[in-house]
Length: 374
Image (cartoon, rainbow, N blue to C red; front, side, top):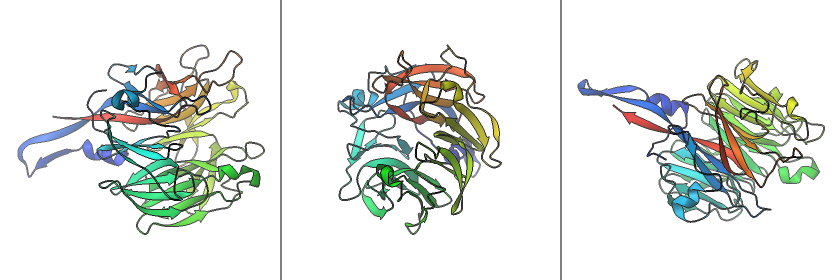
């Protein structure tokens, strides 16, 4: 992939697209944001002894690394590990949590070359998700902790115990919102699940623990102001639901088990396991009114625009393009968890643009952009 510098938040994008001058002396310098591509993080399949991998896609050429070729392995000659999770880019580094291998790779986001690695120790292990703010990277640990990492030294500075099976996180308004699913204790009814709200200044937390409202929370997204969580329920009589976090409470938005956010748009996919494909929902909601405003993707059965078994939805913060990751189906109609997945790309209006093959167990997208200086 071409040499590129990366931006992942609307705030950073706004700053980089602004014009600037030095007290009106010398020529004006304008930085223009142009599209480059994205990575898919593929978790592999442990039971099939298929390691994690990364697929890279270049917007300018509409090409991807072949599904069975790992861009990380190509760059470094070593395997990514087992159980890779969605990556983030912050500053000049890309951070990749690898849950089962208990490490966080720190790589050059241009080349994917390894710069360093972080190996958690003690009780706080199993990196699951990452977020960033104010020169720090925050890592959720599946054992039930959140760690603060200094981006200069790459040292874990602080550790905070949350609740069991800490999952995805998002930052908004000086707070870190963390989903604690208690998923390994499902037989006990997710009794210790919660949402931690961590004040980043004091690194202390309050919690939303009303299980009738936040059973089995796993996914959290934010646009910097509004925060949404998916509570997966119990996979029986309590369905998976997207909810908006409002103070210390939550408000139902819509049934769903995958989501993404960009500005005032919330993208929700409702794909209940075992239900017919025709019952899936691919809807867009307004983050303020919580009303449905359209569809994520225009799909026609029998064409590449059709998504079979979604595993992720992601929104490009620059173009508004939408990427939906999906498993392929067997002839009998079952998701094939040991076969390469694919990514469908749609424009901001839901029009189909392209399909690429990616690695086994695709579950996350990291968008990549370059800055052109004129």
